[in-house]
Amino acid sequence: MLIGILHHPGRIRTQEMAAEIGEWLEARQIQVWLASSRDMAFITEQVSHTDLLVVLGGDGSLLRAARLASPYDLPVFGINLGKVGFLTEAEPDEWPEKLARVLAGDYWTEERLMLHAALQRNGRIINAFAALNDIVVGRGRQARLVRFELWVDGDLVTHYTADALIVATPTGSTAYAMAAGGPLLPPQLQNFIVAPVAAHLSFDRALVLHEHAEIAIHVHMGHEAYLTPDGQDGISLQDGDIVRLQKAEHTSLFARLESPGYFYRRIMARLGHRSN
Image 1 (cartoon, rainbow, N blue to C red):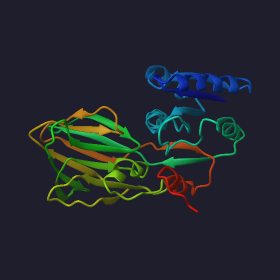
Image 2: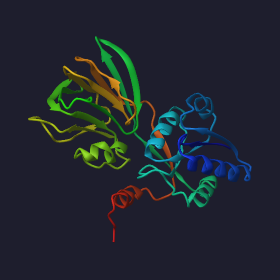
Image 3: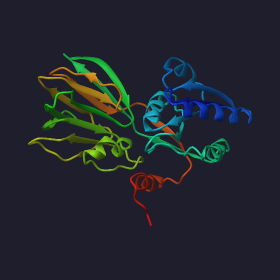
Image 4: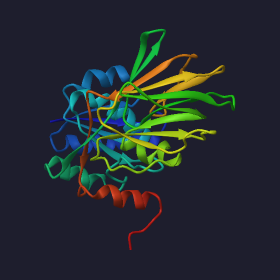
């Protein structure tokens, strides 16, 4: 068995814990490799023959790792060293017990829907992205609205004038889309959410679309706007660009120890609500 461990390059604590976990695994005759989550070239070489990816950090670290692992059907196990940790499976003091359960096969694999986005300019695809949380198309530094046309399966649905338009997966329903008033979707669902941000004199409710929907966002603006996948660096847009979105070919896999109903308990706990 080969296990990869990713740590955050800017956090000494994650590097120290990665080394500790690596020693713990090697003492149990498990092969291990360690890397900074930014060392993309090395990680890409390793993931194709890795059996489990342990990620130390918050949800941002998990999102990056999931995008790397998804083409190889590689499950991810997250240890929460971030602020919220919706996607993680263990707290820092729990990892020895929980990782031992994973090694013993006492876990299940959760499959999560991903988005594929393509940026079309002047009739040609110039860039493509995968996202686990969401794709956001929105304004830049100037506080000026952007005009959007939303097309679904070849039909014009509506026009928006808004700060941004979010297309989210069930995973992303707990992130920016939730802040924009969208519904919370459990990961078992295969749906997409389209949610406007600060819509002005426009349809201001979130839409839920089926998993095979072919979505096109036509962008109209006279100032800067960006396409942002999973909260990463934005891609500058031009007037007339079209962002095309659909279900990605691959899914993200997570090693889970709690029962499948964990999602609702975790949401309440992370949001500060108690179930009793």
